[in-house]
Length: 130
Image 1 (tube, one colour):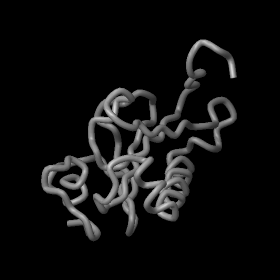
Image 2 (tube, helix red, strand yellow; image 1 turned 135 degrees about the horizontal axis):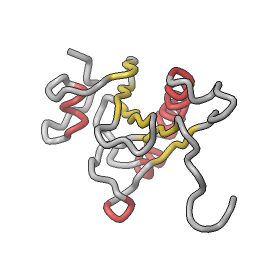
Image 3 (cartoon, one colour; image 1 turned 180 degrees about the vertical axis):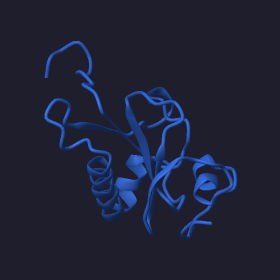
Image 4 (spheres, rainbow, N blue to C red; image 1 turned 45 degrees about the horizontal axis):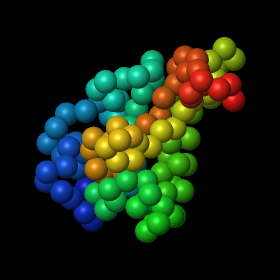
């Protein structure tokens, strides 16, 4: 069983994944973070990076209360992208980091988590070219 850090919520899906109570396809397990494949992938590579401790509901709360952890979460996501081969392909090099914050943005699990997507051309957001 993986260490679950200082905060655990038995009703939280991600806390239960960290605790090994619910199976997941883990791609990276560090002291502070767990990374696993999304069960409903939106790109050829779609993984979630989560802090093991439950402490923060979303990225806004994380940034306000623990900016150092927020920075480490972003660094972990960059490592995951490298590990997943998203940074070294001439044709499709690149990846997208997504935080969904609250219901209207599609957040369904209120344990801060970061989506890392890549492995194909992801296109642009909205109708305007960027």
